[in-house]
Image 1 (cartoon, rainbow, N blue to C red):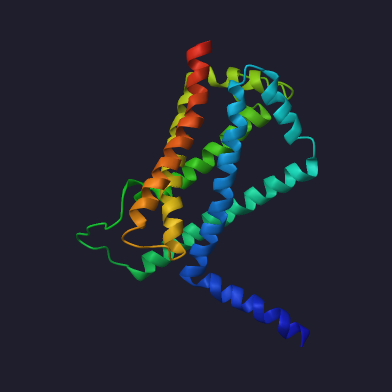
Image 2 (cartoon, rainbow, N blue to C red):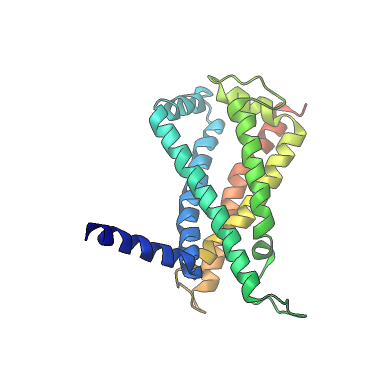
Length: 230
């Protein structure tokens, strides 16, 4: 009896995930977690502009004060990224199988640059995240050695290299294009679609993406303008 009680919910979850609606739900849930991280990460990074240069260093020490919490968050983010990527590929394959022959002409109703580039912008963003971690977490890039106690100086030394800043800005632009489409399509996935509200949601998603992009890009631009380029 207990085995049946355990297996039935598991079977339902499996069947739910096998359907496209289940995969979209997983995409939405993992997207919410990753969106929250993008916002929180930016709020932390913007402390670089504080007149007290030690502010961001204290913030970094606080984040690393609990190894269990830090690695718990990292593992959660890694799991969400993995699920997000795998589910997006599965949805793309389902769409391909449902429409094996392309239309000679299609109007792309609701389609735009963001939606058409979701599949290839994702891997580029993932590659940049790896580089970014190596750069400002492990110190395996030009402009360092890394000083784990001085995040302020690490950021400045890193972004004074023009190619690093340009790569960062391009990646942020792709990320926010990806995020813009992801935010408003998430509402579509959960059934919040209406001729009156959908355009409002899209405008809101665009405004949020632009605000986040401006915040992230302001950091390398500020470094290059204030401290020069090497």
